[in-house]
Image 1: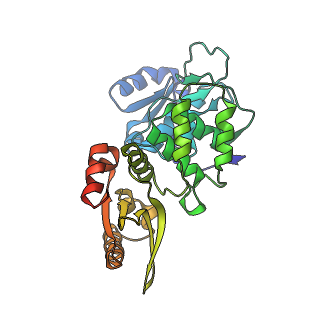
Image 2 (image 1 turned 90 degrees about the horizontal axis):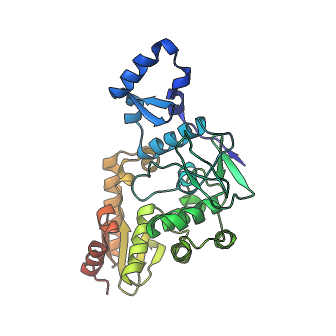
Length: 316
């Protein structure tokens, strides 16, 4: 399986070995002055390009930089594979690039990646020319190393229904596939956390913020809500809500700012239009009787704030 996506910034990479020997001193002076950003040993990118990249693209740039100075076929895994699969993260990506090498001793590496000595899987995919662990293996690896919230967010995305998937996930991973992959790795490291993530993962979460909110609800002992509940009124379909507690008549919505700023979500609308549409949608929901409470990343990350938000909204 091979996947190719547009990565225009890769053309900005500067390999120091390709800089003319007579100009290298000048180049290194410019790099020390901040005009170029070092991504890996022997790989730089102009500071102007770097400043224009999102957090996701900056991490992808580091991965591709490592690949450009590493042995061919290096298998990217764990959080690096998650980024290449365009899985969601909780917060910014770590700058550490990870690859699975099995039991082999790698020795010092000029590419400066973290070698994970887990079993090398028999199958992998190719994304943007790089060898990457399969989607199921990737989320299990993330589940063993990342926080519970980050693990569930990755698993939710892998399990998601078609309209909730990321662009690179063309086939839905099943819970059975994830369970099989979990048992295939004979390592105790992170197994308890990964098992908890598998129990909490649900393909109905529509964003990393929803996943994190649900994990923290679980930690707070809050009754598990219905996800993506459909609501209708006399005008027809209102939409699907993130969280629904029918016994309390309460709707909960994670409201990340991305839905009002990202072009792929706005689909040609302005931010103002999106805000007006969301206000009308909420008015229609309230007219049916339920209470509606909304929160963003600050509340989703905090157990005390989330507990207070839901309690104040009427959840018991």
